[in-house]
Length: 547
Image 1: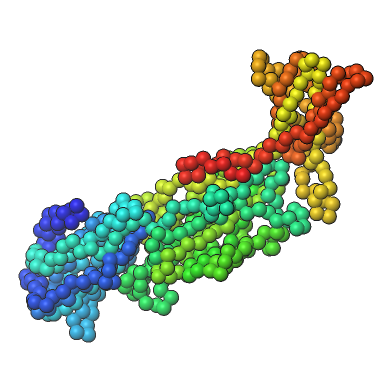
Image 2: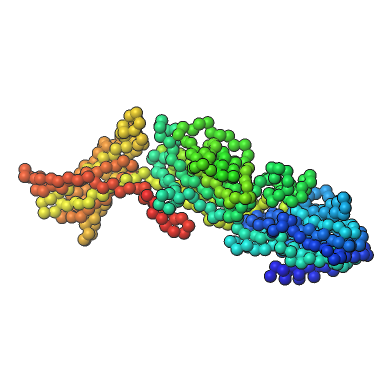
């Protein structure tokens, strides 16, 4: 399909593309060859709008001298070679080199749509023409896991005649290069995400010996070796990095290495996001861009190495949200195209207890950077990527401080009565050196009665339990009452569930026979605490129960 389009465009445009040229013909004899460099077509990233393709090399044998000639390249995708101002001929970094003997003439191309045009060319007798720094908007190929070929057709000549024609040269293959963003997994094969509650939070340095918990770890990975590129080749040799295949002055240079951004959304205003200054995993190193300042030894917050090839990340660096968003950008500072590379980026979301409200999950959007609207002409920055369309990941959520207690048997019929006691134990000395790890929190408990038959009695809400303050008086840390007093009716048999608006609630139930008589007997039990760490999280379209 693309070859047909190139032929059609090429034939339709030849008459105008070569109009006004001087007399003469570019003719090559036996032994003329056409190759590409590197020898195999470059793998191009489907997310990029400034992807370099392979050079086309034409070794012309036995030609005639032609002056004021023209060479035109038709690309199967929009040409986006970087814009260069102030050139005598051309408007871009696209370069045509004509070599004969020891002499090489360099011409810059004019980029317009899917056409790169070189004019005013002198074609010597027997020459080599090399077309370099052709970039294309690979995102326009619509490629996924199946590669899409990028082709060029080359027409050279003079006097309105294209006497040297090479059609449908494959100079690249476009395919998706950034692996589907994901979190590392826990032992159960689910995303390893830590969820939090309002009253405990996830504080830094709150107590000696207690570290904040790691929220999640984001994986940044390529689908083929060489997708994560350096800005330039460290050895100074033009290779398939972000730079062009021909570099001279500002021609062929790149603005940056490949960059990967993590945009955290739904971050509460009272929270801080910590990420590492750099991550090294095997031959890949990602480093924060800009001039980040490493946080001064936040107590208990350290990054651990994951094995011989995964060094402990440097850092951490703190970021505070703006309008609920934090964006961090990493640049590739070490990479090897010979390896399939990935990096695990640990993330801490920290906040003090009772400093934020309950909310849905923190989201994470992973993408290449920088991104811009669709390019249809010369780029101003290399690299430039398409605006990401992937769905953000759902990370840590912040839940209410709540304890759910189940009293599995209650009755106040046939001479029986049931008593219920609930204690708010958020003040304790069970922590390190006598310091509590619980956050003292006042709250109430709402008790619902379930009998299985008939109309259920209304819910009962206890007085405020906890520690009295000047502004919040309480009746103490323990509440106790009978089912009859709370429900207001008799002849109930079933169970009760109490939901308390604080953590560390504990309950006791006791069933009394012949209640209120000297012969009464009782049997007690401890209420069941339902874990509130059970959350349903949507990951990749499926609901996973996480414990």
